[in-house]
Amino acid sequence: MATWFDESRLDDEEVWQRADLRLRTLAESGARVRRETTEAAEAIELAVGRAAEQQRPRAVIAAGPDSRLLRAVLEPWCPVPFVAWPGPSLPGWAGGLDLVVVLAPDGGHSSASAVAEAVRRGCQVVVACPPTSMVADHAGGRWSTILPTVTGDQLATAVVVLDYLERVQLGPRVDTERVAAALDDVALTCSPHRDLAVNPAKMLAIALADTTPVVWGGSVLAARAARRIAESLRRASGRSALAGDAEHLLPLLEAAAPRDVFDDPFAHEPRELRPMLLVLDDGSEEPVVREDRGRLRAAASDRGVRIETLTTDAPTEVARYASLLLSGSYAAEYLRLGLVED
Image 1 (tube, one colour):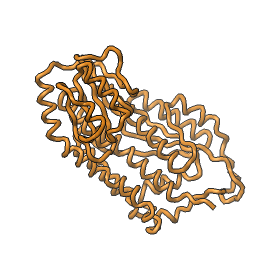
Image 2 (cartoon, one colour):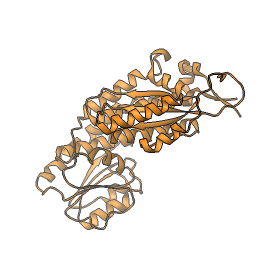
Image 3 (cartoon, helix red, strand yellow):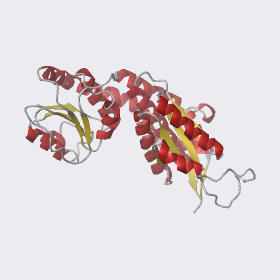
């Protein structure tokens, strides 16, 4: 069965309606951040007051399957040793001098064992989860705080936890309202009601349609966004989409066959999908990032590989991450909408 991309579907309101739930979920990203921040405000105040009565923790351990996002934000900033521990347990040395932070937006059992172990060992524990969930049931303890969540949104939950860590001087500036505003800006710019000609997400979906995406972000957070966007592209298209460090992606670009100037894009014979380099630019100008970006662009240009760039002018690191991630998620959804099977 052949699959082809019909770009006219991107401006077809009847097609949008069939994908209304997914598009609405993307559009409400900023609202979910605001709602989670409001719901957790009182609990955060109590947690900050409790932290002021205690010594700074010896180390911060982000436990559970969502710990890698916290690591991407905190590693360059945290004034004490920081460890991301995505498994169901804790490191053997964790104890009463340490702070364990857990993101469990769905409240599922995957994080419950780590929370229970942290409470048993007497760690300081901060858990973001639904107040009536298995994780919350395991979080009861003298040094435990539950930050209630209601939306099940991973990013919104992470913003709440990062807001708390900023206020206890263990993390960078977050500014939850700016994160929400950055998400709102993307939702407006990439709205299905905006014509294809002025909608960057629709234009990116068209560029992605006949390619194998190779997604790269230079900073730690941009690299995390690249991996999440690649996951979204794979789910949307059922095709390969790769993300990784520059040294892992360069061989793929350098091995691409040179573009055939006589290739007929309208030929009916199936063609091998060529790679396309998608660069996530969050404004980082660190020398290593500039060098890697230049090497990737040069390799792509030498082989005639198409290059597309997602940019953001959001004011904080977390807001830039959120903006890039949502832009890529919109492009993945438009890719899903445009793909048609004969």
